[in-house]
Image 1: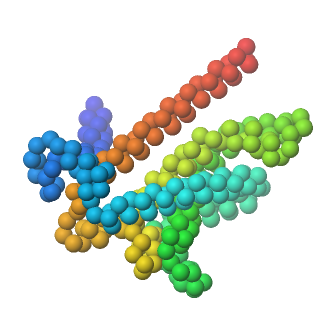
Image 2: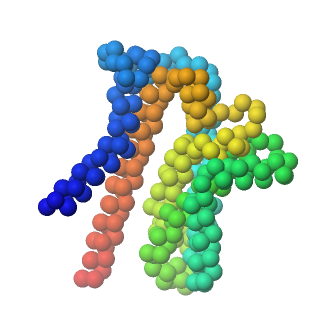
Image 3: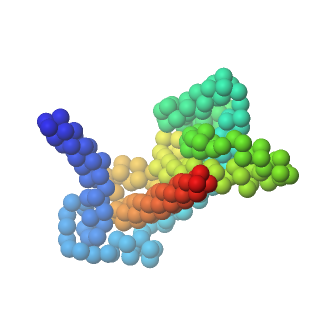
Length: 273
């Protein structure tokens, strides 16, 4: 009884520590106060200012840059990660273990080390830092996460269905498109969402690869804004919107995954009977 109570208390405290700051930001996004923690009455002024162009142009540019980079990086890393996962899955056991270990290194590696390494790489190659280097850097650190998201789906997949498709006259590309991709699609979607979220959230890699031309993303903008002694109030509204969008996407993806799992189970029971 005491052990269960302590476990429940620990879980509640942990959840409060994780979500209390997010909830506070969401609550104070519905007030006009320029200072977080000072409630001056319910208002949607911060949201109106965010969408009507009432904020400074640098924040608008940072938002645009963030989402452009995140979308391009997420799509590219999903394609590369999916192809890599399929290739790794087809390797022999020992080679697969070695490559999986190498794939896990960038994930375990601190972001600041990855950022410095990519910075030195671009400098040594003489590449001008800016949009291109930031996108390439984001693709580099997002791709291993996609591999991890897709790999379990490949392990769960029946390997005979691909060979059966080939025996029935399908080309390797057709078998890939109509057999393998539908089987691993949930993992690809999870990897895409994870890559998108990681790209938006990243600071360490971006700050080392964005160059000196004034390219800013949300993370670098917030860092620079905080060093001035405060944060732009509209960031509270923007953070709340991003939170809601990510939450809705996760709910939709989980709902679809459960529905597909239920349909697969029903089909399995039907075939067994």
